[in-house]
Image 1: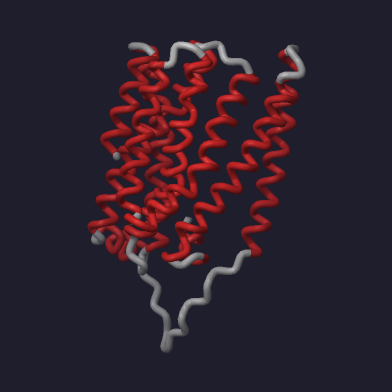
Image 2: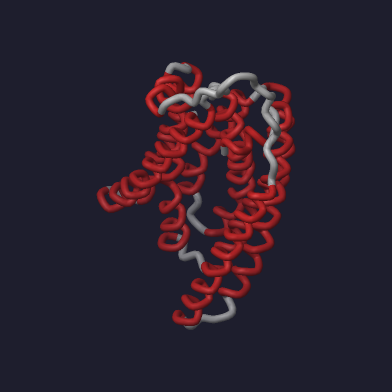
Length: 270
């Protein structure tokens, strides 16, 4: 994430993130259709599990190729500085990060939103598979439709960011994502849930474009690397806790109650 800030200037980031996300979603749609088709060819459980394992190995190999491409990217050359360069200590860097009030406000809001965002991930799968009895083919249709509307929406969010800045875009996008769990709870069959995907895809696109730009914009240039590192570390901690809490709420109450709590946390973060 910090590397994105090095490679692209602030004026280029919205365009770069929009195009990058469009291309990645096109790839995701293509792969989702392929994987969904292959997995639906067999009804034998062991064969399907073997197919999953093959796809997991392939994804790991593709990940290695991604690292190779990252090494080939060249960040912009910093301006030449005279005299010895003094690097801040860990303590100084952390103090510098948290002395930047705009970043602290963004971090607090982001952590609340991420907690609600991550809490919903396993809940959506449980609701689709256990409650609505979705098959691999239905899951493919739902994911492809959502991704398709994400591709369409990226350019719209890019225009909104350029006209009104990241703050309005991230607020609207995360608010829309706060409505997603409620839409799931209201969907009583797979057909209705599928019709909801254009809405969820639209707001997810806005969040993925705006949240990284907002992070880089709210960070101090001097301590940007540490700012990104702290944000990534803390959102990883919420990722370890939030799904467990979601699962616990389901066992103590119901999937509907868990989805509503997830929506409230997302809306609060927004």
